[in-house]
Image 1 (cartoon, one colour):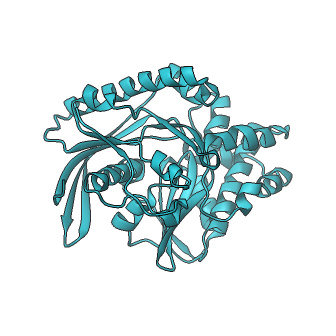
Image 2 (spheres, one colour):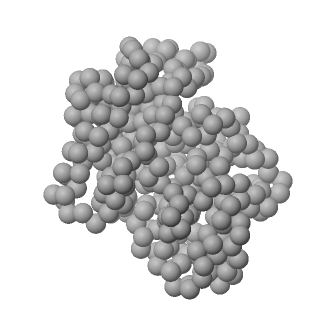
Length: 355
């Protein structure tokens, strides 16, 4: 189905476990240029039980994972249906949903996003476009990041588009190709330590700011093998669980010092990731609210202009772009770039389910 106007809902659940992001968006295609308007947007938090399930699921058996997938699909469908009802949204072309990443090991040909079962369409009574990563991994790609094609189509005014979420990633044009990759963990680590202080997150980086930098820990973090790898490359929660947290835990220092040191690590890796350290850097994701991270990134990139957009775009950019990926899939157009994921060709990824 090809048309110039779409009324869709984008749905995203990130690795930082903040909840499910939903955005009702109208897209318009004029003179081969897409424009958008985010009409309604909301983040629905997870219950404590669901947070625990999603944190522990990486170690679940296949049977337990299948059961979790069914239950999570029901949860997601209920959240989407409530959102549609609450905002009285009608004539929806599609619900475009990322699902929630449980396993991401592309080197083993594995990636699993739960919540992408066909039942999502029947339960919501809407056409659903979802499960965007699996095909790319089958084609030899990393299955991530998928947002860069949206950066190219919707945010071409910026030299670099960066998301500071559970992990940070960046995308940019290099020699006529879109390049993108994951940079480092961000909120997956910062929130882990904020939780130990009884907080959901370190508001504006106020606690990190009070910490003392541990240079030995910083050097060990910066020496991790992942940072030496060429792109394309991507990170999963396993990297945090198996590599980063055990490394930090070797150091008997205050939580404030761990937070401060890891923030410095994020800033250094951000600067090292950019081939040209001048231009305009567009930052979205929950980490953009962390003033201390932004200050440290600016410190290492003194000639870069940092732009942080309106709250709606900042918080719902991934939901926005997965909505666009869904539209491109409905149109049979390329929505995954091999220059980004390392797949053997550009392709149109995702599953379309009808109610």
